[in-house]
Image (cartoon, rainbow, N blue to C red; front, side, top):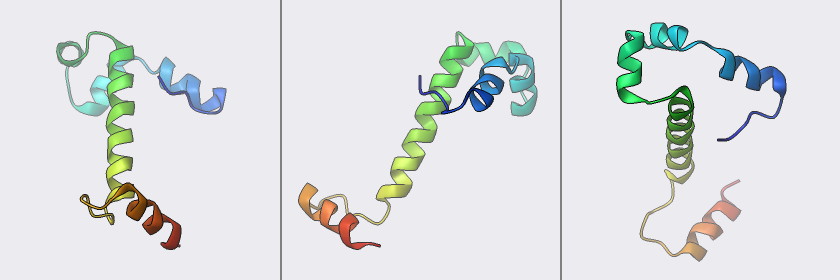
Length: 79
């Protein structure tokens, strides 16, 4: 699991009770565990989803069928 760079950011994420996560998500706490076996599973899924969304945003201007070199050239000139 990825870790935030500072303890000040890391600890609140890990110390937030699942009851608060469920409340913010609009779910009963039991429903949360119907989707994720553990809190670590939830955090890992959240990290994975954020990572995928970031990759999609970064690649949105790059045609999918271009060569790797052409994609790298695009990133080098798109300043």
